[in-house]
Length: 308
Image (cartoon, rainbow, N blue to C red; front, side, top):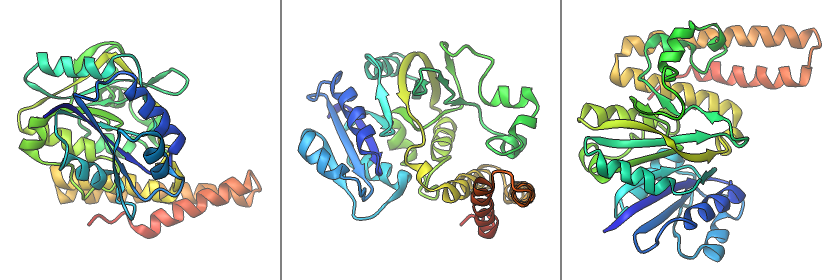
């Protein structure tokens, strides 16, 4: 058995993936580490690059885009490590971050999942630690109403009551860099594939905590996450998938009624945005941008944000 399995799901971010792999290889011992890259039918030469430049990587090339959640599960099924790291391809490992994460799990047996202090491309802090959302949180968070939310509400959700450099217990950490001990996977299984993308790590951490595993944020461990380089390739689909995943979580862990109330609230929000952008477009204010937003919001409304 390997000590660490690093799992990366890639889709059309070849240059960033190459940087990510180089940062990993600079610090790991391949005798104790396996690196599995699941490529979701990239059209940018990612597969050829891995085969030619990184022959030590275990490539799992797919014939179609299997999505982030399914891609991670495919690798988890064959991963041989004592620890599993789910890592985005647009990340860069800083220093001995991976060893520090493993050390923490080894010395804190009640903790099942950890996430690092994450930095943006410019070195600023990127918030990746969270407490579980409430219906009110979900209505405001990552919507056009976020700036109108009660400050206390989102400060609690984003764990803003603890310093960025602190190591603290949290409810969940984002999946851009999430390390779990093997027992988590063996106990609760893989990611819920009902989430194509977004909220799958929230769901996984929720199930892990329900099973008795702690979740921690490690403020002294650093990585860079360039952020959203795959998902930003499809704007309307990103909106729809993000909100549908949010609704699936609330239906699963709260109730169908809670999810339905949230769905209606979100659709009302997109309707207001559509009207606002339409008026601004008619007035000739940045018309090209307004038209693009109108098309995006219209597609969201047409989808109904229905959850399977």
